Length: 75
Image (cartoon, rainbow, N blue to C red; front, side):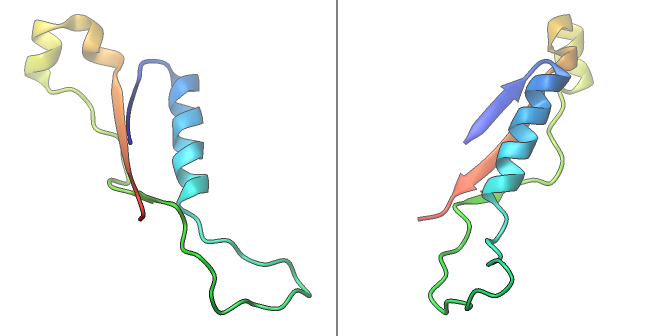
C-alpha cells in the first residue's frame, strides 16, 4: 500500500491508519490470552515518509509538499 499525501491532514489520516494496522491487538484486562492470536495486518515499510529530492522539486515545484508512506500487507 503506497499513499502520496499533499496536505498535513491527509498525512495524519494515512499515518494513523498505518499505525493502527501495524499494532498488535492487546486483549482487555481480565480476558484470557489466546495463543493463536493473528499478527497485525500491516507492516510499515519505513518509519518516516519519503520526501521528494531537490532535483524533483526543481523540476516540479508542486511536489514540494508531497509525502509518500508505504505499508506492506501480511498474508
